[in-house]
Length: 435
Length: 174
Image 1: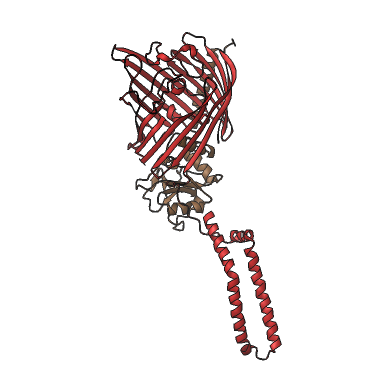
Image 2: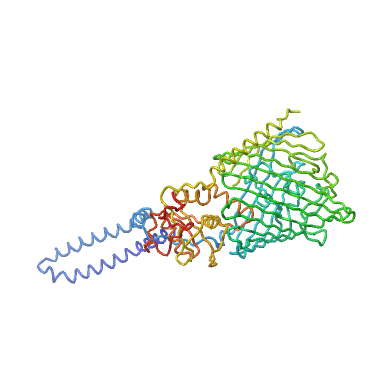
């Protein structure tokens, strides 16, 4: 519509600009015609009468010229005239699917809040500041970048390039991305990244805590991700395959989990998964993944296998998340096997802008696991995942209130049972927003 | 040490919440209100598609399917926020309102999906013009804005789950 109106305005303005010339030409022609025709048609009239008539005519034409000039100097009035005119043919607006510009789109997420736990001083929290950028370079190539600022345990705020991905999308059946990404382990890690505003709860389930914050799964990966649909009719089958450097293990205070620049060994982590999103129940997604990596850690070599399964149902009213994770660490040199298991279930329902939720989570890792060796229970500060190994389980109950379209207040109570330690109770408030 | 809330009371509260949510879900799921004027789904005349399921329609408008079988890029278009047919369409087809739609595409972008939100245009005639001009476009207008006698220019109506807009079993109504 805007295009047409602009075109019409332009056309109208052009006409107005040309009007004085046309009127002038018409005036000359009229004068000439009148001068030429007058003697024939009004032969009895005197020369004074003719002159008077001509002057009268000139006055009329000058008034018309002035009227047109006034219109030209008053575009608003012209616009009103255009608006009042019969509706022009509808505009043609081209689809934006393949649009390159505007190239860069940016979303900023942030969260602040406070928390009180039974074993640590009550505190206000900075939370995080998340700068998410995305650009489409062509109809098939796009880039994604995410820079994160989070508060560390020592109260410093450090920047972190969370993701940097170049993506090539051939069609719905094949998309390939290369760079630093969130690994496709389970559902939560890729569905909810760092922007807390998009999460219902104040924090991630313990099993999906980010590895650079002490989590036990390799949530971040540097490598290649390929995904797409599988022709399967109404079943809605999708595939995912990933290959990457895997995770580095060691003292979490000094070792960066993601091997950004140099893999410690030639063995690459391989991850594969399938999930379905049936057409009849399009809010439902179910799937599984299996990941294998050979870890380079102090001591004997360890083969790591991570298997996950999920069943989630999400629409604008309901959110039902269920995930289970199994981690196997195998030491071929001495035949030792260490199994870690975890699951969580989360249920919420929106009542307008208010969404109460409940989550129960369970995590159990053997104390002598060779990979989690550096974790230490004495440093564990719930609800952060840093340095915990053992059994952890408990419910979380909370309320999320979206007080504007782009900001939410969350209040969450956690009760965390730990093997060998006192049960911990905590209350967290969070204001998460995006702009 | 503060006195902890008992586990039993917490679990009871959680169980009540879960049961209430489940009952509400069972009652409400797929209970599509379809009582008012039909909303006609239109595609470009060159598009061979004559019938779509409600599920397919949702995929097309939520960018879960990016190409037609012809290879043309899917380009959904809808009237601007506030139009009653848009509100009804989003509710019935996508199970969303405008806020949910915005959040859906924000999350899709954040998770790295190649999702493009539907194009917003000002009027029903603009929807028809957009669809007429774009071979891969799909849109919807109120039945009163679609004549079906060739005067709509370059667009045609598609059936939804085998039903035309005038049929009694048609599901997308205001």
